[in-house]
Amino acid sequence: MTENFWQGKRVIVTGGAGFLGSFVTAKLKARGATDIVIPLIEDYDLTDRDDIRRLLDTTLNNGFDPKDLIIIHLAAHVGGIGANREHPAEFFYDNLMMGVELMHRAWQRGVGKFTAIGTVCAYPKFTPVPFREDDLWIGYPEETNAPYGLAKKMLLVQSQAYREQYGFNSIFLLPVNLYGPGDNFNLASSHVIPALIRKAIEAQERGDRELVVWGDGSPTREFLYVEDAAEGILTATEKYNGSDPVNLGSGYEISIKDLAEMIVRLTGFEGNLVWDTEKPNGQPRRGLDVSRAKDYFGWQARMTFEEGLKNTIEWFKKNRKRIESRA
Image 1: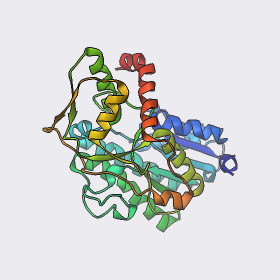
Image 2: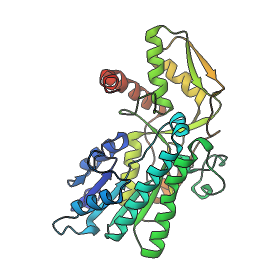
Image 3: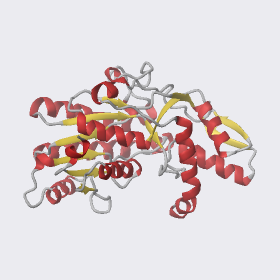
Image 4: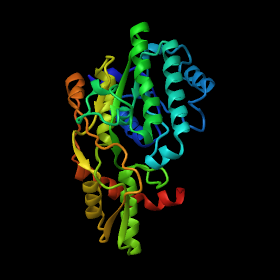
């Protein structure tokens, strides 16, 4: 059934060369998709409407039926708390413009399906845990990443409005924070898991006695292994055609303190953790209700958290020279 779905389809995967995109692309090929378009940033600036038009013109060439085109919009301007605090305007503008314009032009051209990827940062700061999709509008997001979260949440508004008025088949998915092999280990822009893994390994090599971590360790987070996320996105694209937003998560909530201690244990760092309470904690708690994805299209995460962390650590160790030379 899966292979039949992708047969004869052309698929644009924005962000297809990135962390999540590389897994989505590999799984597309495994499902039988043979016509995959990955618009590279060197060739297309997706915040530029002319580049979006050019992308669609090029993709819909030689009379290709737009009904057989699927767009999976993964591209995003992302980063951790520090990057969000330093560049709120860019995070808002870039994410809003590329998403809104791409979906609008896709509707105009008669594209068959549009899968939009949101973010857990779209949820209000004090959402009851576990986060349920129906609570997306009960308050304002956590301040440090609100511009990014709100820009992505506008894709949900657009998706629902275009379905209601035009019958446009777009869906909106809300993945929790991703991690796994191939993650971003650049300390200037990385999220908490790759940042802590790199810091712990480098601190151990230097013989440091302390490892400084932002905040007080009390916030909780949920993380989704990147391969599970890719599977969820493609399963939803195949099987789900509705306007309700859908969480993609693991259903496993862990405190930053317990996370840091687990990474210290798995990397072999022998010093002490020191909490820099002058730095922000971010959202107090994050854990998703993941029942809708199972109910709507039969998907749930498979990777255990510790096993996923081990895989991520091993990948970093094997690819470290390349990562450092690129930096």
